[in-house]
Image 1 (cartoon, one colour):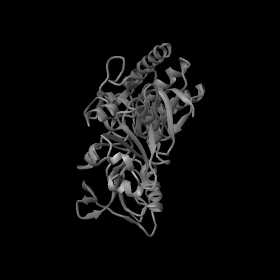
Image 2: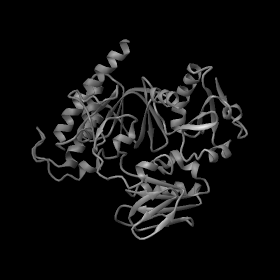
Image 3: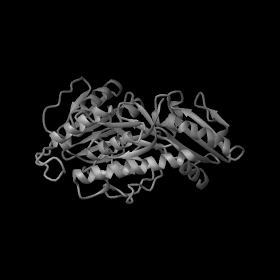
Image 4: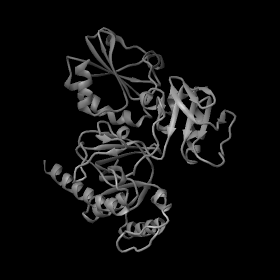
Length: 285
Length: 102
């Protein structure tokens, strides 16, 4: 298993900027994100204040970012991180794919998570609520599970769970058709209201479920790493983009307002340089 | 020393002054991350706390008894009674605090 100097989670302007700067400083970088870099960014119609790019669109800027990464030979690893483990000196990053990555430092750049927790979700996380089908599915062999999917990508997780569980309720939190079929899969079009032990309550019914898988675009920072200091949906950092955890840095929307591309890119740069300093200092010890 | 539990038999853990049980599985990523930390702690607490590793696939009765719904689940027993429980990976210092507090 290779150990990277820096793992960058997120491929928006903050993550790209951090990865580029880290690569310039000859650090090995694992850049984890999505295909097309950032679906959120690609939806931005017009960006007026990114120096050098008058009246550009989010899509255009993302294409330029991709070209920049390509020119430096920085690959994007397509995965989603569901948990980061502080192993003392190194960090283990659990991917949704089931892959485990290892790095000596971590940069959090996955943007701000807007979805609020479902009542009961936080309390039951780890005892009936899971964020990772690949990680916890075997515990639900022969049992009934509910999957709350926030994007069509999660249908694959629902299908995977249906191979293990005896029954899968799938609740899409997005518009459009659900292409999931199987004798033991039931697609339910109602909103989850509350998660209880062994039960999922929606706005029009109740479902017996031993486990509830809540699959969002990204995991709230406070639940991603044990002990991380947060302020609401944001991660608390100092001016060097250092969080309260040694070796963990953050940049972009995740650190708070203003939510601006150029602010994220600037913070990504600071983040990478702080990270390089941290790595150099810890290597000396 | 870390004892590996087989046949759902916790043995001396139930009578020890203090015992630490790590519920895990071979397919569980965070369990693999935790394993070396538990190994270190087993050495550091040698003579004070008994350490046990329970593979939930091989010991389903124990997993059911302790209500394990997600792994890793870490349980501290004090005189056979559950004194602390932690679900999910926590770093070494937090794990030590969990054991010391129980």
